[in-house]
Image (tube, rainbow, N blue to C red; front, side):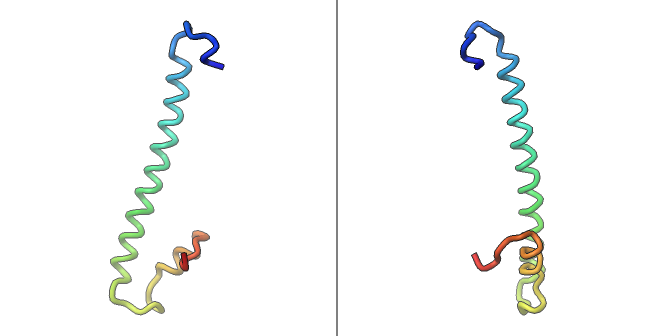
Length: 68
Protein backbone atom coordinates (compact mmCIF):
# COMPACT_ATOMS: atom_id res chain seq x y z
CA UNK A 1 0.00 0.00 0.00
CA UNK A 2 1.33 3.40 -0.92
CA UNK A 3 0.64 4.93 2.48
CA UNK A 4 2.84 2.29 4.15
CA UNK A 5 5.91 4.22 3.02
CA UNK A 6 5.12 7.90 3.57
CA UNK A 7 8.65 9.01 2.58
CA UNK A 8 8.47 7.70 -0.97
CA UNK A 9 8.05 10.16 -3.85
CA UNK A 10 4.56 10.93 -5.10
CA UNK A 11 5.28 9.67 -8.63
CA UNK A 12 3.30 6.46 -8.25
CA UNK A 13 0.33 8.32 -6.79
CA UNK A 14 0.55 10.87 -9.60
CA UNK A 15 0.53 8.08 -12.21
CA UNK A 16 -2.54 6.48 -10.63
CA UNK A 17 -4.32 9.84 -10.48
CA UNK A 18 -3.33 10.51 -14.10
CA UNK A 19 -4.85 7.22 -15.25
CA UNK A 20 -8.07 8.02 -13.41
CA UNK A 21 -8.12 11.47 -14.97
CA UNK A 22 -7.75 10.00 -18.47
CA UNK A 23 -10.62 7.59 -17.81
CA UNK A 24 -12.78 10.47 -16.63
CA UNK A 25 -11.90 12.52 -19.72
CA UNK A 26 -12.85 9.58 -21.95
CA UNK A 27 -16.20 9.23 -20.17
CA UNK A 28 -16.84 12.96 -20.50
CA UNK A 29 -16.04 12.79 -24.23
CA UNK A 30 -18.47 9.90 -24.71
CA UNK A 31 -21.18 11.64 -22.69
CA UNK A 32 -20.63 14.87 -24.59
CA UNK A 33 -21.05 13.04 -27.90
CA UNK A 34 -24.21 11.38 -26.59
CA UNK A 35 -25.54 14.76 -25.43
CA UNK A 36 -24.95 16.27 -28.86
CA UNK A 37 -26.63 13.34 -30.59
CA UNK A 38 -29.64 13.47 -28.26
CA UNK A 39 -29.99 17.22 -28.83
CA UNK A 40 -29.88 16.64 -32.59
CA UNK A 41 -32.48 13.86 -32.42
CA UNK A 42 -34.78 15.90 -30.19
CA UNK A 43 -34.66 18.82 -32.60
CA UNK A 44 -35.19 16.56 -35.63
CA UNK A 45 -38.26 14.94 -34.05
CA UNK A 46 -39.83 18.14 -32.73
CA UNK A 47 -43.40 18.44 -33.99
CA UNK A 48 -43.47 15.05 -35.71
CA UNK A 49 -45.49 11.92 -35.11
CA UNK A 50 -44.06 9.00 -33.17
CA UNK A 51 -44.04 6.95 -36.38
CA UNK A 52 -41.63 9.52 -37.91
CA UNK A 53 -39.42 9.97 -34.85
CA UNK A 54 -36.19 8.01 -34.63
CA UNK A 55 -35.48 8.68 -30.95
CA UNK A 56 -37.26 5.52 -29.76
CA UNK A 57 -35.52 3.46 -32.44
CA UNK A 58 -32.11 4.89 -31.53
CA UNK A 59 -32.62 4.37 -27.80
CA UNK A 60 -33.76 0.79 -28.34
CA UNK A 61 -30.64 0.21 -30.45
CA UNK A 62 -28.52 1.23 -27.46
CA UNK A 63 -30.35 -1.08 -25.07
CA UNK A 64 -32.12 1.81 -23.33
CA UNK A 65 -35.72 1.35 -22.27
CA UNK A 66 -37.45 4.50 -23.58
CA UNK A 67 -40.34 4.04 -21.16
CA UNK A 68 -38.18 5.06 -18.16
